[in-house]
Length: 219
Ligand SMILES: Nc1nc2c(c(=O)[nH]1)N[C@H]1C(S)=C(S)[C@@H](COP(=O)(O)O)O[C@H]1N2
Ligand SMILES: [Mo]
Image (tube, rainbow, N blue to C red):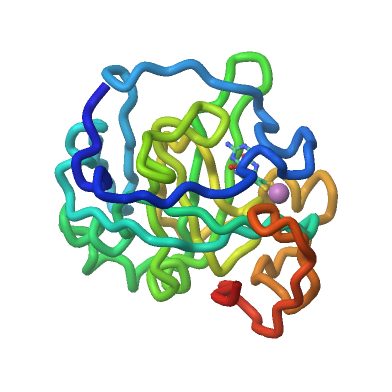
């Protein structure tokens, strides 16, 4: 496996990462199997423009390491140290940054499994860029385990996590949005912006109240 030189200096380790409330939600479509060498991220940038990037290509893009909080709509939150590429940097790098005003939505599609299919999500494209969404390939200085989205997961930290696809295989710029997996099945709110309320903080093992709407930046 490739060495993650950029985060070698990092010493952050999330406390209690395995203490999240358990549920099928973690991988609705089941755990995929994929090799780093076979995996590709395909991007449909509209107007027939297709890009196909491999993992090594992503590793060479400008990367960022950020302590940010991921929130599940079922009221838990976890602060972790994510490493990856900003959506902005990816789009600049492949030259689609000028296309983004033409489309309203970003669709994410997972690798999926042959028995249970794929997990899809549509989010507001401009919002994701404004909120510094990232394509993360590492957490706490090591590559993602498959349960957490190996080899790549998309994270918009201003939205509930059902909008953020693990095991990402494809991105599409589009004007047509549909309901994602949970919105369709369980009636999760279509406005997936994180709401001010009391969350169970997995890493600190306590209930905390957040007063902000959107990305949680306290505690
Ligand atoms: N591919 C895929 N991505 C997914 C899901 C899923 O079922 N499949 N569940 C989402 C939900 S509801 C949550 S809370 C997080 C869980 O991420 P974690 O396993 O790192 O806690 O992944 C999100 N992304
Ligand atoms: Mo979730």
